[in-house]
Length: 149
Image (cartoon, rainbow, N blue to C red; front, side):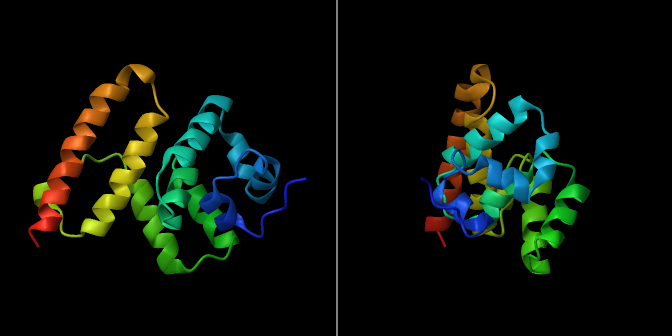
């Protein structure tokens, strides 16, 4: 029998969505409003995000919900306002193509890039190669920028 997780972060960090999906939906029933395809793609994005960054994982979990609904959920779950602002920033900006020349906060750029990779891998297979190549170019430019500092 699978042990019940203590909280949402534990599920997100350990990538144990499958066995705890009913618990996750009980904790956040609003996720049931997503159609089955979006729910599956969200779970794929969470699994493929190579990070233990809880803000990135939370942003991936909530990115398909209405931002106002996400805000209400995060407040209901008693997250710190600063953390909520960070998650909302990621949700509101994950779909913007990063221009490495204009990046001021490398950590934030890497968080957004991590989200973009995970979401590409969870998306339409016909688009994956083209989008991965574009993200690789951005990642390489960010790495070069990071090394030059």
